[in-house]
Amino acid sequence: MDLISPETLALLAGVAVLAGLIDAIAGGGGLLTLPALLWAGVPPLPALATNKLQGSFGTATASLNYLHKGEITLSGLRAAVAWTFAGAVSGTLAVQYLVADWLHRLVPLLLIGFALYFLFSPRIGDQDARQRISPGLFALLVGFGAGFYDGFFGPGTGSFFATGFVLLLGWNLRRATAGTKLLNFTSNIASLLFFAAGGHVVWHIGLLMGLGQIAGAWLGSHLVMRHGSVIVRPLLVAVSIAISLKLLLT
Image (cartoon, rainbow, N blue to C red; front, side):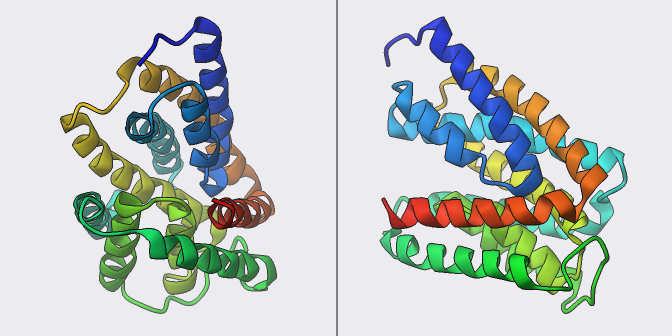
């Protein structure tokens, strides 16, 4: 690919800061970074690979911040992390052989349903609710399922994780957001390993954007811990609807 100007690189880094902030709160940062990479002239496959690299910095930063503040514990999510990694690897391999067109029709409907649930459900807030399934079953169903989806297709993965935490484990929105970032980091890394092995990552762009992601994710995760559902709920609804519209219009 052609050399990218310093001005364009600076713009990509700025987009990554904003995307990292949004992603740490509600997910969906890829709605900004992937189009920005394509606009900068990065071909589609390297753009997808580089997007995974820079996104990994943001999800790692947010996860570490949430872990440090005690919002999540690794011991309670080890099984979910393992199943998410396995699912993401399986999805990355499967996408090479299966047609994903049906997901373009199904996923927007699911995301709109999630948005309506988060918008109108009175029990979603800063208090935990009733747990519906065991953590082990959650790890298998949501960890592997959403991980597979992220490796196979990707848009809205954070909404799938967050909905699973809230609906099935009864977690409050702040805690669900924290758990989502850890599992999202896991699926990002799994996909990134395969992209890197294939030589598709544009490293200097991804690393530069990664620095922007660190700044945005640090700020976003602090906002979540300070404001909880007041900031998470509306942004989660907005991101779910935005992804739905993007998929429906493409």
